[in-house]
Image (cartoon, rainbow, N blue to C red; front, side, top):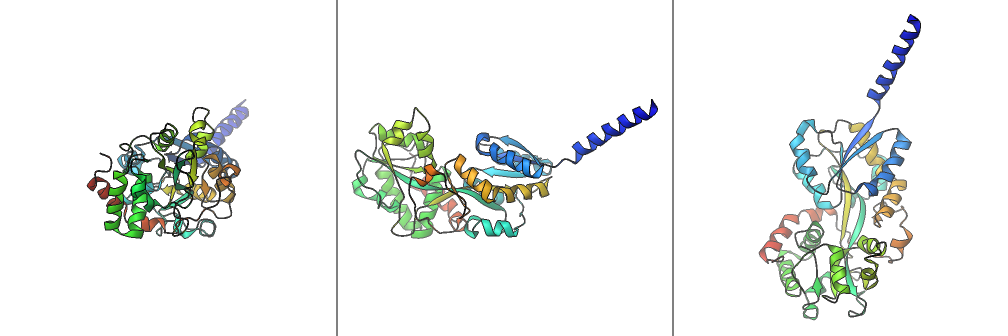
Length: 337
């Protein structure tokens, strides 16, 4: 009897020990669970590392800062470039190890030079145009939105939204602050209404005849095509890739950051490397109708149907230098008012 009890106790102890030693990685995610769960399931299946996710559209950076050294977060998954910058600027990140795989899979322009963040998917800041009223806009440039011919014809969301701030910062990087201020002032003068809503709301406004062109990320076209209530909006517009005759279209990204006090640093490193693999890159981009940052990863058939494009090769870090200047310009010209 004693031997049986001893064996039982040993078995229980072994189970507890295995549970205690089981690897896990804790993720704070700005990206919705359905976009990342299939990828995390594959990661766990291949590595045995359990991935636990806390999702929120906002407040995660403040939470990470408040938790300090006691934070359980290992990795932050962001939905845009601005959030990656915020984590680093607030001293809440640490360098990941730039392995051979990461260096080969992810081009340098999509990585922080100090290895604090890494881009995972990319999307274009497109110009949507009315099929009915705008004609061929395939040669359009961002600079064209300041022309008198667009007076009262443009819709957009807030100039302070990260997607628009990134575009404005890229304009400063290419054209200088003075020229960008003039451009932004002229674009404001061409607006059909005050900046409001989200990117899809602007396409709806085009469908309803409130405006003829709008700024919007590429993947929203795919989202609208898959939504029975919004497919009519999508069918009313053309998706244009700006500045194809010169520098190329502005790119924004989603990405990952290794947190400063990551309690499971090795597991976090493995997750980052997995997310940069061809398998994960292809799936991640397909799930949100984006473009992978890994050049050899496949683009989904839907995204491929939108055509090829030339991307602005300016490194994200260079654009980042002008983020604060972009925000000041939005306030200076009263863009949202």
